[in-house]
Amino acid sequence: MSAPTVMRVKVVDASAIAALLFGEPEADAIARRLGDARLVAPALLRFELANVCLIKARRHPDQEPELTAAFRLRDRLAVKEVAVDHDGTLELAATTGLTAYDASYLWLAQKLGAELITLDKQLAKAEAASSKTRGSV
Image (cartoon, rainbow, N blue to C red):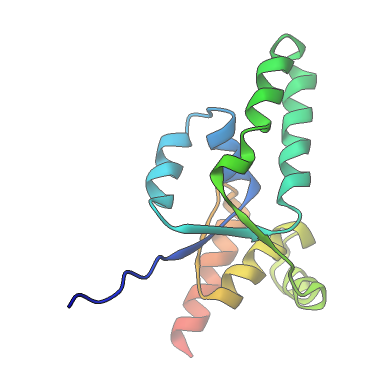
C-alpha cells in the first residue's frame, strides 16, 4: 500500500500570477516553479491583478481587449485566497521594510511554512532572509 500523496502548498504573489496571465517572459520559469502545488495568496491578490491589468491597458490601449481577456482567466489558476493577520502583516512590514501588501504574502508563507513564488526582488530577498532566520532557530 503506497503512502497518500500530499500536495505541496505554495504562496504566490501578484507578480508571479501576472507573468502567467499576461504572457510575460518569466511565465515559463514561474510555471515550472509552481509545478502541481496547491496555490494560495492573500485576499488582496485580485485587486493587485486588476491594477496590473489596468496599468498595462493604459500603457497599451490597443491591447486592452486582450489584457482584459487574460485577466478574466485568473480563476482557472485556482489560487485560494485567504485572510491574513493584519496586525502580524503590519509588524512584518515594519521589520522588513516591505509594503503592507507585500508583507501579507510573506506573512502567509511564514504562517503556512510554504515557499513564496514571486518576481518581486525585494520580497524575494525578505523571504530568503526570513527563511535563514527560521532555519537558524
